[in-house]
Amino acid sequence: MKGLDFDFLKFNWLDAVDIVLVAILVYYIYSLVRNTLAVNLILGMFIILIAYYVVSSLHMNLLTAIISKFMSVGIIALVIIFQPEIRRFLLHIGKSTFLQKNKAWWGRLFGSKDIERDNLLRIKPIIDACKTMKKTRTGALIVFVKYYDEEFFTNSCEVIDGKISKRLLESIFQKHSPLHDGAVVISENKIKSASCILPLTDNDKLPPQFGLRHRAGIGVSELSDAVAVIVSEETGEIAYAKQGRVRMNVSFGELEKLLNKDF
Image (cartoon, rainbow, N blue to C red):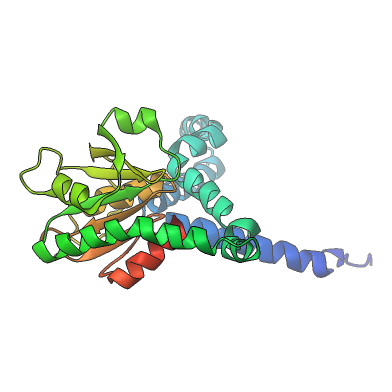
């Protein structure tokens, strides 16, 4: 009797590394698609795949041909359908690199304490404006982007390109201002534009009390590396959106740390 081949059971340290890397990849993908419509899309594709094998095994030629044509677009369809998730995944990978994670360490090594202090001074007018708007329950949506996409924002915003100041932010979001609807976009230490119309999130698991400001803030953080500060008009509560996640009831101390860390 010919002996059985158990070579496939051999396990070495490279196999362990391979399993760990795959687990990390699956975790990252899951964290990006969790609580989004992408979960339903993946489930739908899985159902279609099962249906294909069922009709194929039953020799239902017409259905097999139709489903196989649908599946033949393969990777192209995946790229089109999951374009926002792929974009977020690449941004997440870029932010997770060694140099990005250790910017504070590199800054201390090369003496960037002065830069950090200057950054806190730039953030102060924003914090002060949020304090006033929280007190008066003035709704606001402030978006911070590292790279200002003129084509995207100019088409839906009023260009400001002004110095960041507490009074300017308060006047923009004042209820009778023609610019109070929409978002303010801050980039390169300037208020670049106001009254911006942003894409809303597709996340259907958000609390019902979230209005358009919260959904727009979360939406823009899903599609880019932007973060958003949202002041609720109903409660005055401050929220912070990043990478499609939202942190509620943020204190001013936390807000200062978050903005100093991200920008």
